[in-house]
Length: 367
Ligand SMILES: *Cc1c(COP(=O)(O)O)cnc(C)c1O
Image 1 (cartoon, rainbow, N blue to C red):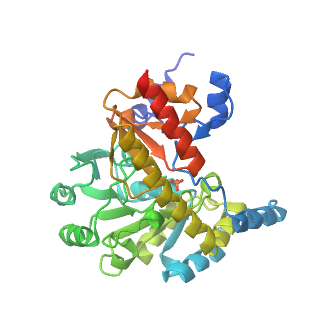
Image 2 (image 1 turned 90 degrees about the vertical axis):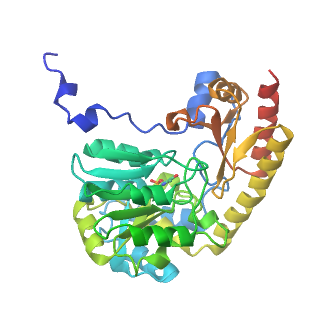
């Protein structure tokens, strides 16, 4: 080939390293020639999808020859009923990654500044780089967001701030009081994105409630997803909630049919499945205690988490432990790409999966 097509790409894309997903079970088993492995690597819901969601998705397939409802009318109505938010404030996305990306592209140009925290969700970095904007990464405190320092980092070039609450991969959270005082400091011309991917799992009473601040802070965008507690990661549905002007802008950038028919119908159905959500949350809190107890017995420490995962400090470079766990059929998530080489992130599984995970840790730590 005569041309160097890499050289033709925009500078942001030239430097981009694609998102590294958790290893799929099938791939691990094929590569290592093992079977019966368990995946605790991508913060998926271990209960499987809700029965109601599966039925709705299956029933929707008779309309697979049609384009989906580009306005997502029924799902927005269901979200409106559930949370008391107006449909004209909702933007649906192909997963919340989609809306996180839309927001960056809507508000930031190359050389504008985007602020996010050290150790925060990698997608903020990917969005920033792909735009060619300047990443302003604010050092974390105790693995969590330093909201005061983040507010102080705002300049007249800042367009967007991404916050994750709880944060992935650390599981940390910040309070309503902290968020409120942060929002008061940030100028209205700076868009604040509050990523609440794990909100449904949090039971702490001081946990910030993003929806409750939307009325007072028109520059706030709250994002949520059906991928985690609602158990629909494969179907790709998430959404942003923001004032109607911002929502109108996001809808201009959004691909018209970005959420497919099974996804729209399954998401609307699972919103009505309180029993499923409740079982998901209680399995999670029991599993969190089970893993914490196990880690105590193994002499390991971890970052206290309010999500559906726990990030454990292996006390040494974790790459070889990760490989050894794979050979035991336990897939967890290395977080060296977050500059946390000694940690592994473990998704809370079913009781039996947690037990197997702890057994595998015990075995490989002895070697
Ligand atoms: C998993 C996750 C998401 C959700 O991604 P989807 O695209 O909705 O599947 C968003 N933010 C954070 C912090 C996450 O961990």
